[in-house]
Amino acid sequence: MFGFSDLLSVIISAFIILPIVVFLRETGYLIVSKMLGVENPRLTIGSGPRIIKIGIFDIRKYYHLYSWFSYDAIRRESKFAYICIYAGPIAVNLFLALIINALLANDILEEYQTFWERFIFYAFYYVLFDLVPMKTLNGMPNNGMIIYEMFRYGKRTDHNKQPFIPTTTEVEKEYKEQMEQIKKKTKRGT
Image 1 (spheres, one colour):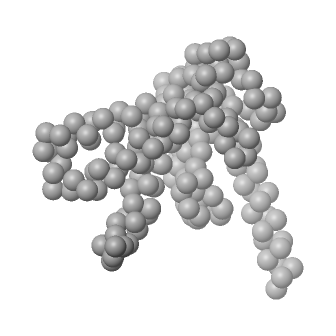
Image 2: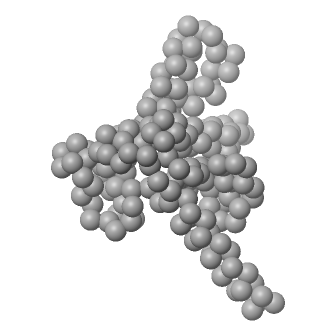
């Protein structure tokens, strides 16, 4: 039977654990791309109007599941560099899940065991859906599909005109245009 404690668990999972896992996943792009020398990196969490921008972190108003990484240029473009960038989120979530699992197995995190078990679940969830090659609902390839196509064909083969990762400058320009449109619609409605 679904009770109050289950409702509390769902809320903690949806609004604490899942956002942390998503954030850590997105930092996988950041970690690898920094090693590869990207210019103007940005980690955007959420969508809609900006709440705050601190350095490379852009926090938006609406739910965290729509998050992305962007940059303007990479020092050396190569098949290997793109594979590494797209493997970054998979590696971070896998590494964290395995480390936390080892800590649980050795009774180091036993006090908050349920929390950490859920964390591991969501981390592996993202690993699975990032690793298995597939196209998402909007027709875009997931990380696994991009990596697979880079290995198999030596290039991106989804025939999509958009770049691998959007440039930060273009994302910022698009954001400003969207906010101006929202302001215009709000003024007309008043």
